[in-house]
Length: 226
Image (cartoon, one colour):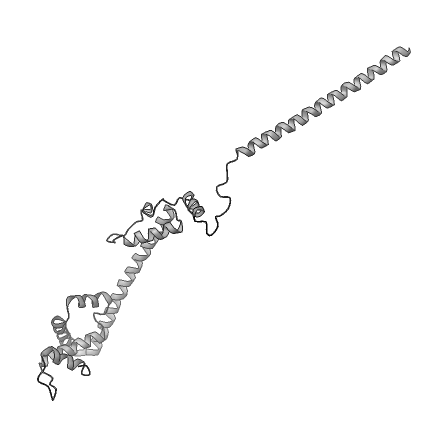
């Protein structure tokens, strides 16, 4: 009886040991799983690519900025921008602007976008300038018609004669391009010149001989100048 009891106890102890062994094995399996998961996590972490930009270069780090600009698409040289040039333009400004953009680190897409917007702005500005010149010339013409009244046609003929006699073509072109072609001050000046020519009078100094035609005209217009 005691032998059977001992055997039974031993059997119980053996079963407990077996359970413990099973738990240990299970525990070892779980630990092994954790190690495996850790290994996989490390492998995944190692496979993550390096970030595009960890931090901005320092203000004085020229090489760092140059490397960053290159990553962002800046061409190797300013010529790589291939900026659009308006029709009839020499392209000199585009060359200069390309250098500025390259120094600033712009990529090709940004540079061309800015250049296109600038060209559009310049076109609008040029059109507005021409319209302003035309409007100024029309305003001045209306003022001269009102000032001269019935003598407008006669005075206009005198002015044209004086301009053809004394003003070079470059001067007339300058007045036209600047919107001063009908300016009242300039127009009345040439009217005075034309009338002096028409009167054909020489201005003489009391102690001087007669002056030439152009010298006489200068004295009529600007008597205080020698």
